[in-house]
Length: 618
Image (cartoon, rainbow, N blue to C red; front, side):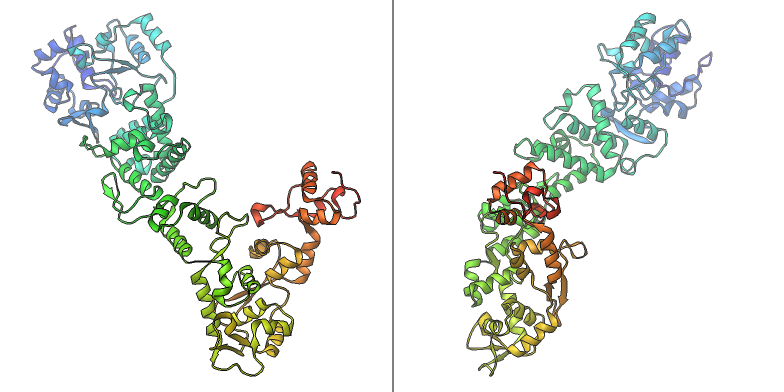
């Protein structure tokens, strides 16, 4: 038997709403007695059981697909299908009633009997829906107070009519529909959205977005059970900004959360940092799969937190260490954390502003290994078997590299040691360029003696040997290291004239009165270098000799000065000069952070500081 007169469901009307209107139209009464008369179990209909829904469609002579499209259909305990999406009971607000007062007001305007007119929209029970898309009003909520509230009879649970309903609508907060809500409804309507969100179930996409947003908006300590509907709306808006961009956006949000937490100074445990998001992903009490967000958070932690192999995160263990902190690397290698920290800062693996940061584990182990091989600069001459000035020149010319260098320097021993492996490599190259002899050939002398004879720096001769420019080089087996190398002065003199124009960086530094590191900073940028230089490639191997032309050096020296130069010219102290520079707001042309010291452009100086000026105010 079908009902007469025929009543069609409204657009986007839920099955419970349609049944309640049928009851009011056909009997003038409530839903449960009406369903009993039709032999339809009201509880089964409220739970969305297919049998009850199909029975209602049959009695009302309504196509099943029309009504079922707007109703969560139960497919298992606590599981429903809504259109093409499978959702859980947690995704629904039932038995809490959610409605828009303005929508009900508009429904009521069509006639005198509200029960026959009020339409329950299918999207209202979805927890992700918190704003009326038609009127831009926050949806109102009514908690369940009695057993039959589960049937969502709008005329009963919202008794307001006329002026009362108008007042309720006027008092409701106005806001736009969140992007997350718009995405969810569009997805139910069959419209595709952002790729990563579409790759998740609807519930996974919404839950991940809201929990990420709650973490961003309210912090890790906020209990999600205490969030109001308005706060959940804020969370959804905040989270969607990142989840709509997929893994890249989510990682960006997680970085932001970590940076914010780091400023608190608290211990960065995973739960402390990522709060309820992490607890949800780590929970073993829920059977619901959270989706790809779990992998993303786990991989993000593996990529940003110093963890030892075997430590677990969200169900998986780290197989190989990826990151170290100063503390973890010091503990693993037995090095002093303070010394190691200074060196890591100078190497650029750690920032001086954030010494607790993490860095690549392999790069850190390489630095630690170099520290363990350190040879103090004081000991380098003995290891090489050369004089102290000769050893210093090798470091100034970057033939021997300090364990760490930096434009502004670094405390501790970082500038005062050389890697033993670097020393061994240098000596091995010298040995490879020389012919071993039991007796020094006539006319051959040590490098230092040859330098005296040809009036050239020892370092120039070393460069020629390493670059393969000299044919007559021998290693005297009666001595070790640097002192064993002998050359022929006549050949050295000729090759220097032919192959080494200008001066070396260490010589250039001496000529303009700055440390060698400053000159290297000036010439290091190649085409964009502040001070031009010429690279001379060796004939064998990969050795490159840097030379600075004298005319370029003179031009630079004539255009730039340091505060000490000005003080010397004017016979005053440097502090006075620097005070005047600040007073006249003269900025360095090249700063200490750029090249290791402040250099000023001569043309920028006030007349009071020019060399020809006689009096300097104190």
